[in-house]
Structures are given as structure tokens and as C-alpha cells.
Length: 211
Image (tube, rainbow, N blue to C red):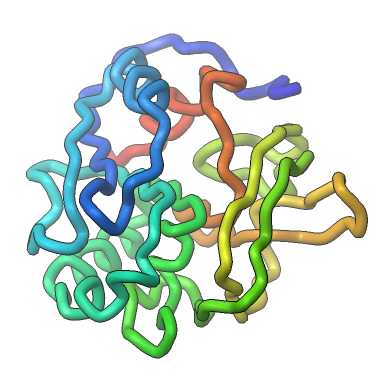
């Protein structure tokens, strides 16, 4: 698994901003370590309270959390939402998992989000939980097409939106389905993956940062 991800080969001076704060509480410490090993400078930012991305930001990692509990406040931080949208428009790498996926949608429970993805997110009464086997369907900033991963889902939300370039084909458990979005430099998905299983993921992301 993970064949074709490549091997770390050169340092990077990229600034990778990682979402933090009350709305984005779930991340793996190893992701930060791997990004630093790849040569990136890692800078945290709080989408609730920071009105600007860290200076020199050339990539974003937006992990899990509970943005639905803070949807109104996230929406109110329009200056930051605009910066995230502008960064995505440049093709910069943006890796968004679960809560990050919701933040990139047009709306979350009716509150305006970044609007990068032509999709709307909303709460449901159903808990989606479990491990998933998946394959990358589209070349993207995290992995080449054909890369197989194992990850997990944990959420009570749903995203309404279609794409011709989904992030993953979920192969287990049945039924098979597609999931997530690949759009320019954006990789957005409900699937949480641990980069330690594919250590070159961090290098692949930093190598795609704008010079």
C-alpha cells in the first residue's frame, strides 16, 4: 500500500498552516512532525478568531473537530474565509478532513462557509462511524491515483454536492461508493488518514506549494 508516494528527497521552505482552536480539535501530532521533516514550517491558526492566515502561508491542513457547534462564528470571520478561498484559487495545496471538508463547503447548516466546494453541509440524526479501505481515484496533493489507504469516518453530518473528481473510492465495507472532492490543489474528504502509514504524503504536499 502507498506505492508511488515517493521518497523524501529535498528540503522545503514552505509555510503549512494547520487549523486549530475550539472548532478544529482533532489532528495527529505525527502529521506536524512529518511536515517538519519534509522541511516545512508549521504554523497553527484558529479559524474562529484569527482574521488572517499566518504570514507566508503556502498550504493548509484543516483536520477534524466540531465546526457545526461554531458555524455562526466561523461564518462571521469573513476576512479569514476570504483568505482561504483566495489561497485555494491559486492552486495551493489544501488538505481538509471531515471538519475541514465542512468548512470548505458553501454552507454549514445554512451558515456561509468558504464556498470553495459547490456543496452544502448539514447535521443529521445519524452517526457515521467506522474504518474504511479506500483507493485514491484522482491524482491529488496527498497521493497519486491508485494509492490504497485505510482510514476512519466519525461524523453526524452529510454533504450534498457532486463532483467529477472524487477523492476516494471506498472499497470496504460494502457497498462501494465514491467520497470526497479533488479540485485544483484541494483534497477534501470525510476520511481521516494517518500519514505515518504513508510518510511521503507530507513531502508530496510540501512539494506542491507555490514557490
